[in-house]
Length: 303
Image 1 (cartoon, rainbow, N blue to C red):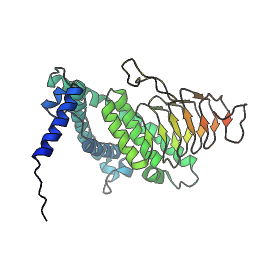
Image 2: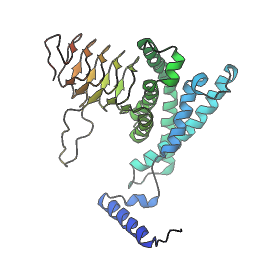
Image 3: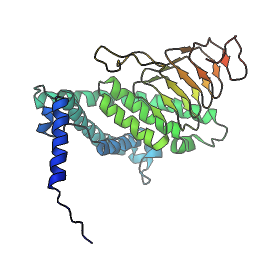
Image 4: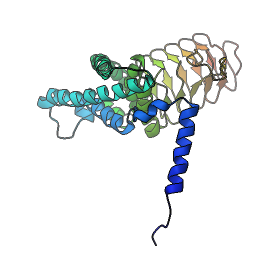
């Protein structure tokens, strides 16, 4: 049975809703066309970047060592061309309502894409430390190849290392899309603004949340369902939540946080401290300290 429906009223109602939104949010510039990055294109770009970073593991199955550099060069060229295009869209969107010559936007997008490309060798090296941390930290891991191919924490960190660089380059929307692709696949939610040192390991991973202003040192290990979140959300003069304030925890080197723990606010967890499972923590912990539900060393109770 065919659908009998006069769509004119529906189309008109949707147009009215769009017009009301644009007027309320001063979005008349949207009438020029869509000036937003395309998540599907970014997802393809990230897959290309992953192949270029780890060609013999995440590249095509027919790849051989003697053609590795050719594959990496060809794949990077495609990925960076797409990055330049998506960057130009984000820059145009950020300047909506302001006149900006297209040539100027294109030049800036190209410069940012080049800067991102030059960061890739360093990103690969720090990812190697993440892979080794996972392999060394999990007795069930049989090889570094298994870790790279299978572990959700490693996948999340590949995305985060890429997203964090985009965030640092002033491309928060692109960065957030890259981060959310990993979030949807792994259940690990890492804001691209979080600063994470080398040799970071998320074991199991499901439900981990790391906020925008979190600062994490070297050789830190988290287990599933750990939250590094904000304790409170100050409101700005305009009634909107204040943006960019340092509101998430600082974890120094060699910290371990076990499953289900929640650490809130701009607290510092000192070097080598251990936070037990299911702890709710809102205060500093000294270096070498430990906090658990049943008892504490260093005289600390569960916050």
